[in-house]
Length: 184
Image (cartoon, rainbow, N blue to C red; front, side, top):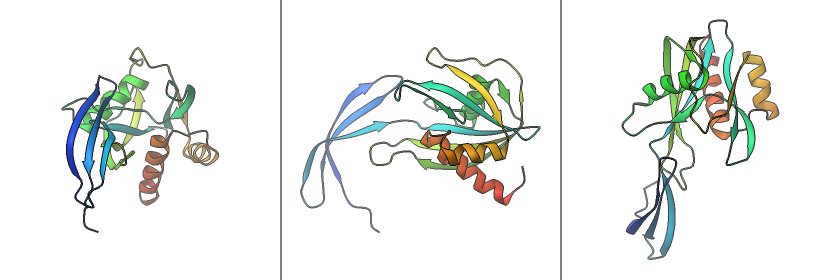
C-alpha cells in the first residue's frame, strides 16, 4: 500500500501541559476533502515493564486510574520524558513504582497505542532477576500497591479480565510470546 498524501494546511496547539499535549490540524485529503479539526495527542511514548523476579514471579501494580475512575491491575509502566531513552525510562519507572531493580533487561518490541489519534508509542521491556531494593517513590498522582503473580496466575488474569488495561494486556501477550520461545 502506498501512503496517502494528507496535507496539513494548518495546526493549532490546544493543550501543552506535562500530562497532555493536544493539537488540532486542518487536513486536506488527496480528493480535496477538508477536515477542519483533526485532533492528535502528541507524546514521547511510554514504557511497559514485564519484570520477573529471581523466584520467577511477575511484578504487578494495582493502581487507581483517574480517567476510568477505577482501580486496575497492570504491569508497571510510565511516560518517557522528553529526550529520555526508553530503556532508561523503564529502569526508572520499575524502581519508582515498585521499588524493584533488575540486572538483566531486554527490549521486546514496540507498538502504537492508538495510531488513529496519537503518535504515542509503547516500548515493551522484559526485566529478569528483579529484586526489591527500596521502597517505591511514587508521584503525587500515583496510588499503587505492588503484587507478584506466577506466570500461570498472570495468564489466568489476562484471560479472565482482571488485567484489563490495554497497554498491559498487549505488552504481556507480547512478552508471553517471546517467553514461549525462550525460558525465563
